[in-house]
Length: 329
Image 1 (cartoon, rainbow, N blue to C red):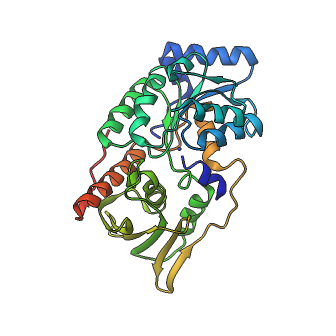
Image 2 (image 1 turned 120 degrees about the vertical axis):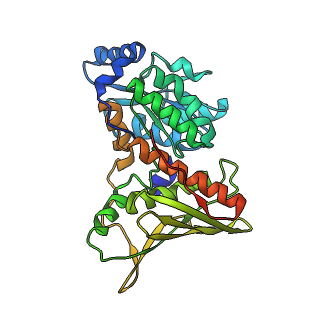
Image 3 (image 1 turned 180 degrees about the horizontal axis):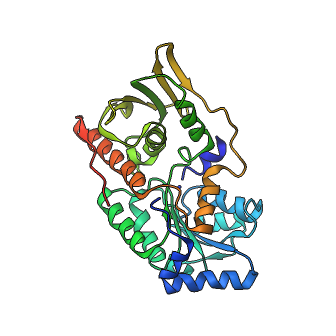
């Protein structure tokens, strides 16, 4: 839990690694990396150092060497002190004043702002250069912007992914397997910390960690939502196209996520039966995409989560049931 908490960070039709050659610039950068080491070394740049994610990832790669041959080589921070702190803690050799200074020096990029409204603009130059991109959660702040960005990435053949590390975890996927053996149920309860008035995107900021795992477990066919709040506390109701209903409880004290289903035997807590691997699954999936170009989540799945969060944001303001926008690319 502690590792996931620190990198509450994490798509699309799988693009082959060779698709990177669509962009001459990206192809050159990758061939330099291969020629210098005679192995598939991956040089990563990080855009954004406002939170602890940059430090966690760079320490994992540069200090602990969890993925031999993969290292963070450059960072840009919203403030110089943020970038310098990550540099010192994670042995990052280069700090840039403009993220685009990384072009030609990296093979993959992690975009990691606190507020999702900054994510896609920051990622565009790298995706256009053919550089695979991991965009931290939430992927973006507005659905239309996300559609346009992912269409561009798909047309260029540049791999892009984004996910909640709570969702893309061994624990969540184990619960998915458990659900295959349970009897029929209609009602779900999921709890987790959410701040509807967060300065970093309101319900988007932590809401992604309660919504995206819910979608991974029970399906992404969420059609309608209603958020109920009092003094920044409360929860939400979620309706699936399948007819299932989920009640979301926004934790205000406990920092953790729990899921329950209503079975004939009673309310049943869904607990993972497995230990998280080291390094954890989200990081392995991210690095695997950087290595192979294979995207671990579909573009539609990523956008559907954004659509749900946007409907929840609208419901916070209206106090009414809100339809979730359809997603198509």
